[in-house]
Structure formats: C-alpha cells, structure tokens
Length: 218
Image 1: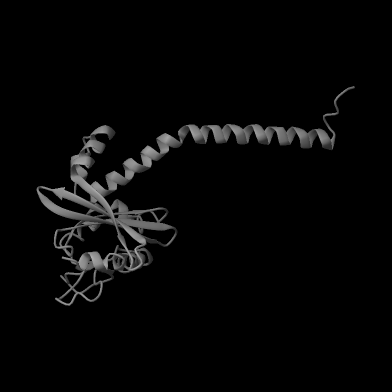
Image 2: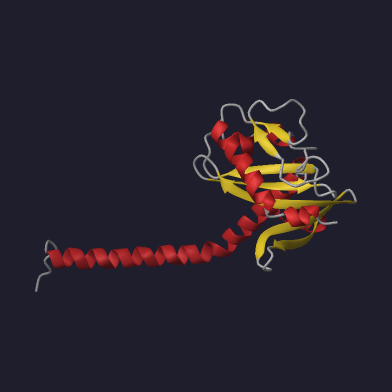
C-alpha cells in the first residue's frame, strides 16, 4: 500500500515525530551543558564580588582557575541575614583585603527594562562603602547600561556612607539627579538615565533595609 504523504494523518504523525526528536535533542544538549553553565554562572558571580572589592585590574591577567583560587583567598566566609522569625532574607559575604575586614552585600532590583543588581562592598564599620559593582539585564546601551559599563560612575560610591548622623535610623545612601554637592550619602545620577538611576536608588533603599540589623550590630 502506497503511503499518502499528502494526507492529514501523515502530516500530523510526521510533525509529531519531528517535534519529539527535536525536543529530545534539545533536552539532551541542555542536560549535557548544565554543569558547565552552572560553573560559568558561579564564576561570573565570583568575578562581580571581586570587582566590588576594587579588583578589576588584578583579575584582568588571570584565567578562570586563578580567579577561583584568588576568590577563595579573599572571600573568607559566606553567610546570610535572617528576619525576626529566623528565615533567610539575604546573602552576605565576608572578605579580607590587605588585612582589613570587608563585607559584600548582594542587592537586586527592577530597572527600566529588566532586572538590575549590585554587589556593594563595605568597610569594617559596616557603614562606609569600599566599592560597588552594578549589573543589569536589559537597560538601554549608552544610558541606563552605564550603571555596569561606566567604572567611573561606580567609583563614585567609594567613601559614601549608608547612614548619616549618629542615630542611623534610616538608609540614606541614594542616587539623585543634581544632588547636594559633596553630600556623603548621595551619588550623582547617570546622565540621561533618570529612570534607571531612580531604580538604583530604590534598590539601595529597599535592599539595604534587609541588612539593617546586621549593619547596626557591633
């Protein structure tokens, strides 16, 4: 009996078999690559943490294995902060740089077109910013994307403080358009990226609040 390749049944069966084969191949490839993908994500996270500790130039000449080894030397402990019920709220990294204690706080927020994030490194006083590294998923190139691409803008966070005054009753670190000159808690917004800059400021306010008990602890 000759197979009717123009029949609806043939087309449906052929399409179904083809879809199943493609789905199997995609699942197989995805499963095969997952281990390497996880390693790449972990390495990228480690790089960002080290970038926040002002080590971009140090990493520039290192390969992946060297970066992982260096990270293990610098980051001495990974911990988390918890709420009043003991539930985990956020991660926390302890680091040692030139013999001095540093803390790195991961922050996440929502930008103009997608997620934004930051690793904020603090000095031992838990108040003064030692360094910062920002990232984004889909902010506009040349505008909002500058939070990641512009190392000079990130450097403006150095020396800024999270709290102001002795009371330390609220998070003061923020990004402002035309801020008061030399105010110790404000950073000038990215030129032409008002929405992204506002989103960064909101992220700082909301995410740092999760760490407030830790930041105020002795």
